[in-house]
Length: 52
Image 1 (tube, rainbow, N blue to C red):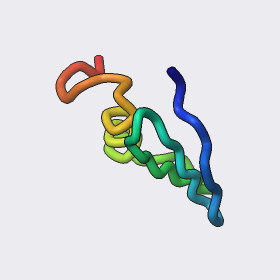
Image 2: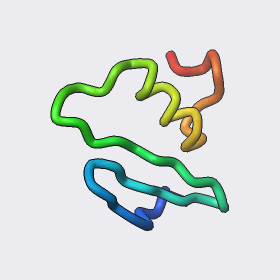
Image 3: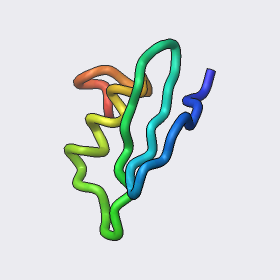
């Protein structure tokens, strides 16, 4: 099941999946790699150490 967009406030998008909430900023510049990894982990796309 994919993440479902539930709310947008300013430059932040709030997604929900299986009761978990993930907030994703939508900056004007590129997202720092650490922030992108954290979002991916929270979304359940991979676990720590599996991002390669």
